[in-house]
Length: 464
Ligand code: UGA
Image (cartoon, rainbow, N blue to C red; front, side, top):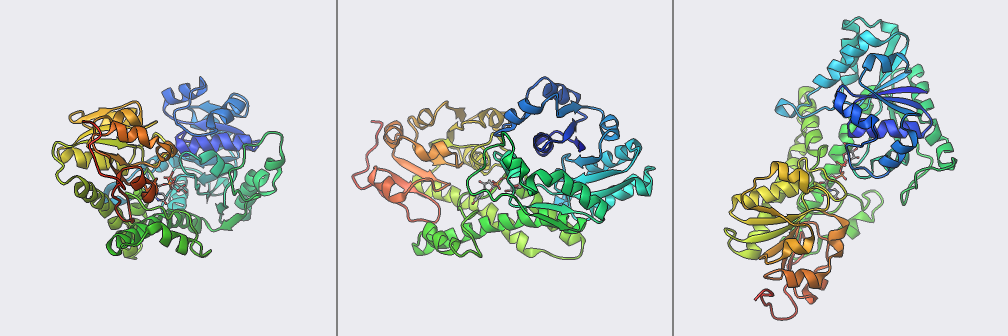
């Protein structure tokens, strides 16, 4: 199948590479000429596992890059829209990029095209795309609009695409359904997994994945409702963690107990300093805004958002409880990315915490394996420094804070950390360590939803 993917951001680029991997001929289109040139020359602007391998395999053969939307659309049977839908006023999604693509598409189509929304968009967007295309001269029977939401996580986007829990197609005609089913056939009939050199399956992958066919409206709601539900799970467990702190229970024991109920499940129940990233915060606001516009006050979402924001303030208080006063304290911060495995700092709770601590007069020395360059661009320089290892960050500090769940932060050489710190104090916003172990290793250890731990032996400043 010949496919055009409009927008070569994180979703568009991953989709283009993965469609090529499934055997389709793909043109990835972006109006940023410089970015297109970069992609043509073999560079990749995002940090995503397996993407370099897939692009190396298919670039110039099954995937090409272009800045001309009309040229790409004319030769394609399906056109996926994967442009940005940033946050606009009042939390609503700003759909101006989608609208301008729809206008351009109207002038470019020469025969029947299936237009597919891949970006995260509010319900009714497919209808608006159709209306805009009709208003701009496209004839009624020359196109249809479908919705095919993605459920890709940053860091594992390629395997999420190729080994999905489900594929959702939102279509309002048999013709559109047949085309989309054809595009995903190598996954749904399992031929991709039996092919010569498929991408390695992640643990627990269910193959072949089911394909769920629904109306376009339902598909649009599925995307927003999925992200809202996952965010709700996180806020729920954070609220439970707060209660655990009040009564002296252990949130991980509670998680084990509730997560083993197959109706609840154990995933996305990790307590911490709250969710962030380019999706959850924006999508929750957009979902709430669209519900309100449609006459429903989705108050549950307000509370999910409030708990998430409170979680940061509670963590700041935790640091204050560990250190008494904050002004002038030198703190080592491990993690700036919004989650481990990415260099993305958009809406990062770690960055928000650093800003709050700087405002309190702390000095911060931060280390992140991938996100320091980006963080440097937005964080103030006064009071802020960066280290090239976790141990360098810890050197001479009054305490160490863990703010992002990078795998390497869970495997620190604790002796080295203790020796580097001025005081053996760790405030862990991601619960990466066992409190009993930390006490035995001589730390004052504070985490989320578990009792604070004093060291087994006498506390001593390690630096003097
Ligand atoms: C999220 C969804 O997981 C994807 O399914 C969706 O496709 C994507 O948004 C999107 O709409 O594009 P992503 O933003 O990459 O993916 O990140 P997640 O892995 O979902 O994590 C989001 C935030 O929640 C992070 O800050 C993470 O640290 C936090 N989190 C996650 C927790 O605090 N606890 C958890 O148990 C899980």
